[in-house]
Length: 147
Image 1: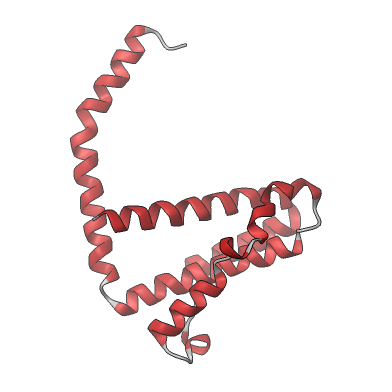
Image 2: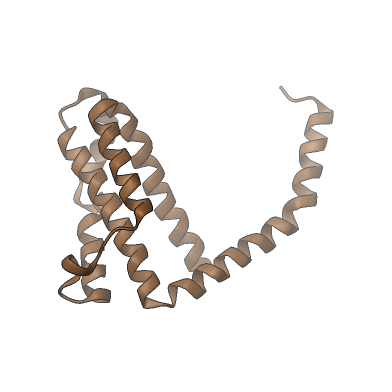
């Protein structure tokens, strides 16, 4: 249990840094809004999400019989799958030939390779990728829509 001094210190730090954190958050969100008004930048972001989520869904399908991953059973439900939704977005922003024009960024390629590696060597770690990806999407869009 934290001592009174530690609690006071934490409270003081939180109070003293709250304003700068709020300003930083607003600046980051402003930059995101500016970037996302560019259709090309937005399309690339959606493409990267598409490739990453497609790789996660491929891994989950491959690992669905692994009893250690029963905790992820909800991911098999259609409302949790994201690949098809990203495909529709890509078609809207990039046109009907999006499958030939959408390319993952180098970062997305590396991330997808890591997901595949983990699913082949340490499948239980796929839980972390699923957790992070869904939480990130939720927080990203919640934050984006707030401003």
